[in-house]
Amino acid sequence: MSKNGRSTMPLATKLVLVVRDGLEPALAVNAAAVVGLSLGARLNHPLGSDGVDASGRSHAGLNPHPVPVLTAAADELRELHDRAQARPDLITVGFNEVARRARDYDDYLAMLKATSAEHVDFVAVAVFGPRNRVTALTKRLPLHT
Image (cartoon, rainbow, N blue to C red):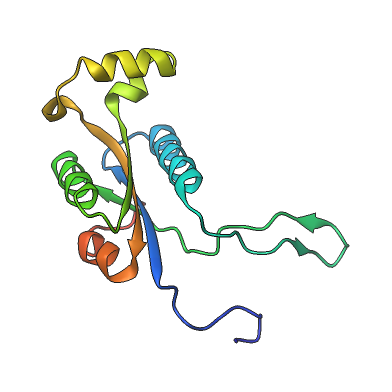
């Protein structure tokens, strides 16, 4: 353990959020939030313990993983989604233009059903799984700036 009580051993798993480059900042933040929340709902990993600050105020436990937000061109994002989704050891969540443009979830599902896979354009992708597998898929992608 380090001085701050956190483990110094690297986590065996890794998660990344990748947003399409060129998005307006508000759209990039929204897309990262959507895939992050959706991924979090699929994980059976515990959050860190609640904390208390020096004033005695409680703070809810957080995800213990670092969460890099990367960027990729539209074609790279599609390739990442497809390659990650093909691996059974990875959990992959994609947020696409069909969902982004839908008025509500039922509208999204209906529009998605009428859209062929090659016309589903991704806005963001979240990937979680074994550290080496996630790194192999995302190591060449730059951090979102």
